[in-house]
Length: 453
Image (cartoon, rainbow, N blue to C red; front, side):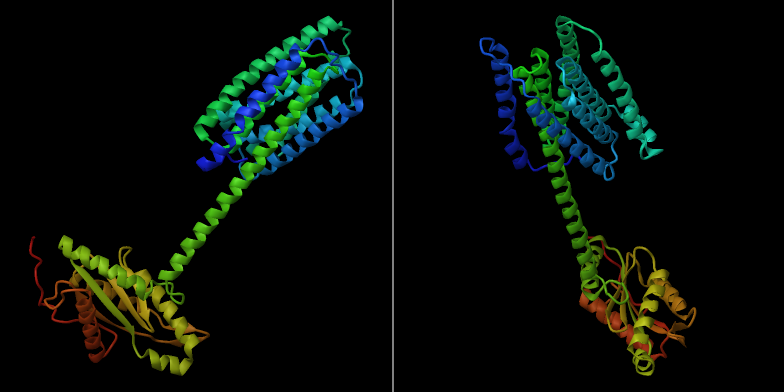
């Protein structure tokens, strides 16, 4: 049960129902507690069986949902609640099958104590980091440890209470015992309610609100059972409030799962959007950037270089005689060569450099904060990487070379992005004309020095 944050509109919508869920049951409890003139006793074991077994079933479902949630959110508090509600269903089943009034009263006290106990432990684990770390390390060593510990606790707990139920106490002594146990449970619930409300003020989530309200209704249920004798209408009212509190817990879990599913879907959509954005700027064959991306990056870097008086170099790289290679070995072979060519050039470039395929066998390499001397060094590394070994595809091996044109923004005839591309393209033509498998730079000794603004 991940504590997910809901939009403010959803929280305010649920807060409009909270006063009714607090005020109406409280007023009804006070009314029933003061109604002494009417005959408020109703003995119906069949209805009791149905009501408490329904609570047991709901408690078992809550335990199952929380156990499933621990696989996604392995929080110790969630594991504690899962175990607590699971064995809470067992206590409810024993209460449903109990026949005499004394046993029902004792098991009712045991049920209230058990619920207050595991709810309190869960709240402690939510707020106490040291206890949370200890329990988490204990649970990490074995998946079923929480259930094993819970089973031992339930065995000891239920044995003590069943033994106490056999003690020959008078009605007055039993009422006194019920009052003491109820008072201790109410104190524990009250402290837990303060922690739960504080948690709601911090998180403002629908899940925490549901748990806070359910804890309040459980406190009313304990108070009702503490004030009434078995089969009294107030006693019935207490068990009804207990069922409603379980229903609120179930609602909180289902709501939390709905919100978590929505956030998971939003995360998936975000990842898909990121993937589509990545695909829109990448060349699918070589996994380099595409022409659209490199032109935007070139325009941005050129503006930055002008503004900051920094050098910027562009390399235009073209595979030599690539058309002949395609004609001789087929386009699939050519595609394999392009993929390998791009991978070798990426491995020879710096992390700050940008490589893009601009069409066919032509690549652009953008070198920020690099002048023509640095561009010649990068071009030499690219030539060496391409020459390092032959290209092989489908058991066919060929030697492939590239020609590179170099231009930077310090050239006298470079005034904008368009003229920078033209200068690099002319240098590429010069490299091709000089015999290919080389890098060329037009007028390497002619440049201008940026003037301070």
